[in-house]
Image 1: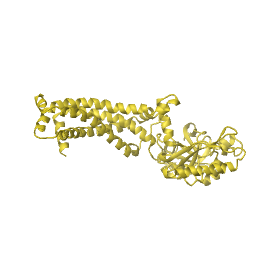
Image 2 (image 1 turned 180 degrees about the vertical axis):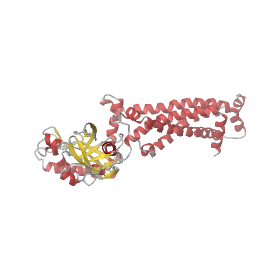
Image 3 (image 1 turned 90 degrees about the vertical axis):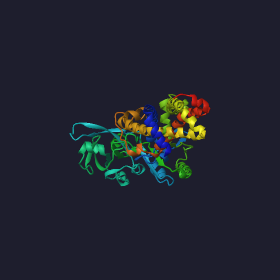
Image 4 (image 1 turned 90 degrees about the horizontal axis):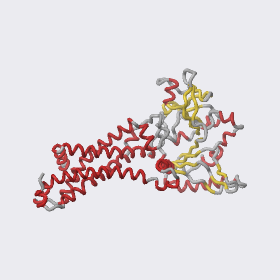
Length: 432
């Protein structure tokens, strides 16, 4: 409390110095927090994508040496081999090779609206925790009996039926086919890219594949599988995958699966995307982290150097005061600790101002910020929804606290320590 009162007294006495120190800290913290917020939103367990930290993706099952082909995962394989696995908390399949976009008929019956489509199966809504405003997700019974049902977002519901109207049970015309709406979910943010869509259908529910392909051929469409596997179950999961391989080979003795395709974790996929932002060649991916690290170091050391110059100038003016206190028995470490704590108060005030500045910029220019810093092409042209949990994560607070502490130590400790090393006589001769 004593140090806090001293810092406030010095702020009133040296208003220009305090304002410049706080402003310099605020700008540095704002830039760092802006980058940290972007990466945090990209990797944190944020609804509906609450399993990011435990998510593993499988795009192909295995490699066959005899034919040189990879084994894709069709729906029948998913249901027979993967859907009943015990180690994962949940499993789901998505068709990411077909039907990325489609069209819904607007209320005027003349114009269409392009919408994002997600073809999946009932496990999708157990994997991702959507908030259902109306109704519920389609069921396995809907899937097995090929009922034309759909889950839509609140945004599409408002567009088609009005903000106060009930969409549950009504019909939406999608790609010239009628679908009964079984559920309406809160519109997901464009920042949750994996589960982002405007309309959710079960695999091939749009009916078009059955027109283009032979009977039941749609069940051979390759799928991408997602597993939520906690760290303590990962070994059991890998063992279960080997048993899945053995079961597959038992029915494909002429061309068995020889090498399992490696799983890709959500984090690995995200870091791979970040690497392409900084390096054109895949050969340089091992060095991808150097560029963001260099940016953070630049944002740390440049303000620290500027602030340390201000602290050094201020210490020169305070040397007679420090000399008198040393003459009366004050120890050097006591005086050094006082200077550090005084500057820490200013740093924390500047850090709070920087956090507010970063949050304001992040909300006001969120479409531009996330597009530039994370290469998130889904946000450009579509303003992403920003939820409270995206801004107030504990990791962000710890980053801010660590950054402020480092900035204060770098800015205040060295010039104060150098100044306090001067003899008392020399310090007393310096004019204020």
